[in-house]
Length: 103
Image (cartoon, rainbow, N blue to C red):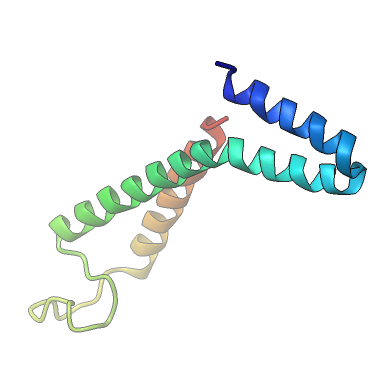
């Protein structure tokens, strides 16, 4: 049995012979998307898992997600805005690093 990549190439060759370059370009684009889909899904899944872990850590520390009803009622003074900004910058840097590390 042929490998999936060989089958995709064979299909593109036959489409090229039958339909012309316009449709072949569209088919080639779809083939590239289909080949990249598993890797893209993995990247998005990894990023989602990291976000969930960060959110769980934040909840364990007792930080409020916003001004909604989930904010602790016993916290009379809101968190330092500069501290929140620093945390957000650190989180953005971590996410950016992970994206750069991925091929």
